[in-house]
Image (cartoon, rainbow, N blue to C red; front, top):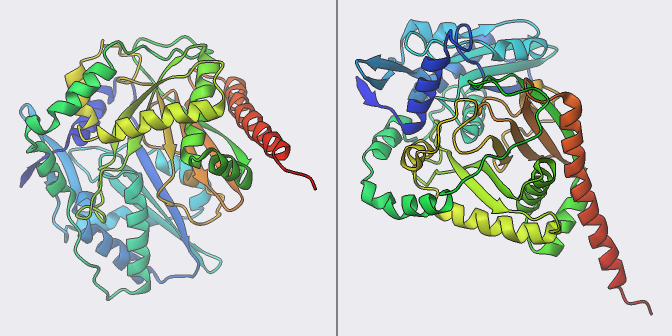
Length: 423
């Protein structure tokens, strides 16, 4: 049965179709999202295979191909008992060492499923790696998949409750009356009417058609210090880190009109357990003046976030059509910089696995910052385009970001000390 695709799936298919064997031999891999976790016991292979089978049966999106018929594309869902599905879950050695290599597999949209699974049994533990195209999943989906898989491992005979399928979400999205989003479209037209490119100091000249090679740098920031700053300012770590990021971008670019993107969750009670790309890209545009303190920037970005959140209902891909920005094949649509805060706690283990913290699979942005809470720190994980930025340049940018946090928290500490009465 041919089913309508969502706006997100439509964009993923178009990117793959355009770039396959033109920009990337065999197709682009920068939309591949890894999920790697460890089961701290040596699980039998039949139980692992059964858990994978149950997982793929439960979430039809994992059995979905995107096919073209004439000038239209559709979702086609493979039957649960298709023998090819179970060949996708393979035992290999050295999963951890080969994770980056396995992540870079190229998927064939029309002729295969966009999912591969691997497992390794070693030293009384089992490591599992799923590699999925962004067409199938978003960040929130990773937590659902991990929890469901572990449920099937721990209780193979149990049946999990009802879950709405992504195909139903796609059908609902395509059936929305344009009148319902008319006010939101009007808001974004006004908000983005004179949108400017956020020019960053690149080390290599940008090519006419955007290409991408991922690299990552990370720094950690003391958890108590950042939480104390946020609490005293009456804000959250989420907003404080976003404000610091925007201030760093303003200093790095020497611009004040800072346009970036983020992903906002669109799930509700019906789709809470649905696997699929339901998160929506949303534009965050703020004016950040150089003389602003971090406290003042927090107020600005909070207002930006709250207004954007009220108008997040229009799918990003539909918004791009409505706004119709000037075409520039050397850049992504509307923004080249992304900010993410890990609200989902997908990774709960302290394992040193590359895919756990590389913030991968969400697109070819110049800079993509993920702020993730750990036991004693917040990790600032910056994924960037290695073709345009040298490692030293990115290190300098992250130092700007860290200095902004240090200046703000130290100034706040000094102010707090001055306010203490001595008897």
